[in-house]
Amino acid sequence: MPQYRWFLAVATSVLSVACSTCGLAAAKTNAVELFPDPVVAKGKGFEIRQSELDEAVANLRATLATQNQSIPDRDRNTVAARLLDRMVVSRILLQKATEEDLKKAKEAADKFIADTKAKAPSEESYRRQLRATGMTPELFEKRANEQAIVETVVARELKSTISISEDDVRDFYENGMDQQAREVKAVVDRLAKEGPETVFYADGKKKLEEITRANLARLERPERVRANIIALYTIDRVTKQELPEPDREAKRALAERLVARLKAGESWSDLASEYSDDLEAKRNRGEYVVVRTAPSLPELAELKAMLFELPINEIAGPITNKLGFYIVRVLERTSAGKMPYDKAAPEIREFLINQELQKRLPEYTEKLKKEYNVEISLPPTNR
Image 1: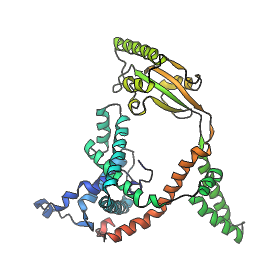
Image 2: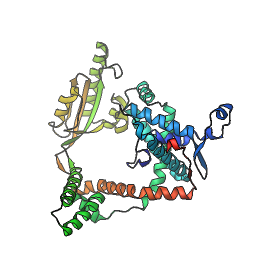
Image 3: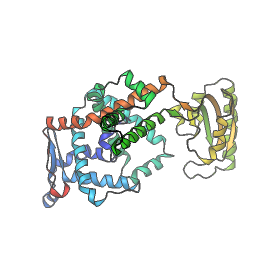
């Protein structure tokens, strides 16, 4: 999904409440009469009740709890107000979605959901992870779709209006200069004229150096390998227990047959998609990027080291370790160092666009709230 999840900056639990309880506002029951559920925000085409805000706060607490975090009591009212503001803007943006927006959002959401499922060892594990955050698969998918719609509308209405010059991209690549660095530099230049001996000048210069150094570090890439890999596991992916001996021998025999077929010229991507036990294989068709300095399972340490030594395009395997049998082929090996400009430029441009997007969002959302006649009426305890 896009990097500018501004409306979910605190946690992903916010957006679902923005729409999933729309029908509750119309329900008038004896319970509502006994326990008033006042409208805390309204605007053209929507209203949000206290119960919806309470649910948003509860969802946020549950999400933070899974990360061993919590909302301090002193921040409770501030957090509630911010959640409500994001819910309001989400309601507005969902109304502004065009048919084309909905189509693009569905494609993005479907990919996000599929990628999330692929990272879980099993369907049950996927559901168990969602339950830990208080969600069902249905609610998670609803949230993903709503989130994608909002992001797509923001991209169309605001992000598409932002352009970054080639000079700015080059300045980032060569000097680490971005929007924040330019703002700090302007202050440093002014202070230099007033007197470089001041402590403020020294602090500003230090801050500028930190920003540009961090930006340039983004362009450094550790040694990496692009490789084809087929994995045939001899352990149960859920229980982590070894498979019975006959099953392990069957995997070994399959691995040997696959090596022979690959050496005979059959398609690696087709065989990986059909036979590899790795959950990512069907999505990436057996092609991976392995980074020298990235953390990995101890069981894969020897295999990882081999990838940085094997000749290019040589089919190797079956390689045995505690997880199973592996067949590998190194396609490309890239030395550590600064990314070439032509490869770095698109990433730099996207980074600078999103930086400018963050700067423009407050004014954009305030304009939306005026356009939709938004009224906020939080009780004093929630302000």
